[in-house]
Length: 113
Image 1 (cartoon, rainbow, N blue to C red):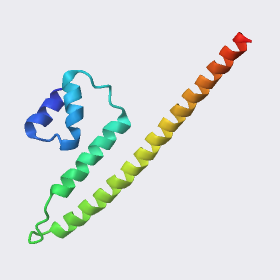
Image 2 (image 1 turned 90 degrees about the vertical axis):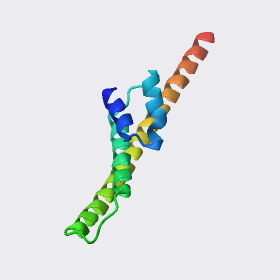
Image 3 (image 1 turned 135 degrees about the vertical axis):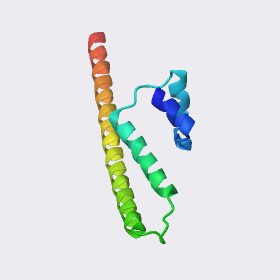
Image 4 (image 1 turned 90 degrees about the horizontal axis):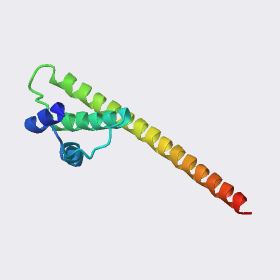
């Protein structure tokens, strides 16, 4: 919570994080998973990289801009990987629930016969 307050004071909370901030402060937020936290942090990293304006006149700035572009691309790749993992996990959970529900219906039908 103290990190959240520090982010709010410093202005680090991005527009897309406001619902999470409100939920956290109201006590309604569920616990964030490691994947969700990593996704949020990767999005914040990309936003920070996008805000940075290169100053080509400075020594070494071309290398910094190049490294920034590479880091951004790597972050986007990781976001895609995490989103696929989350989707696969959600699909697996959904099919497990469906299977459990079908088994319960079959069991109930068998008892009624």
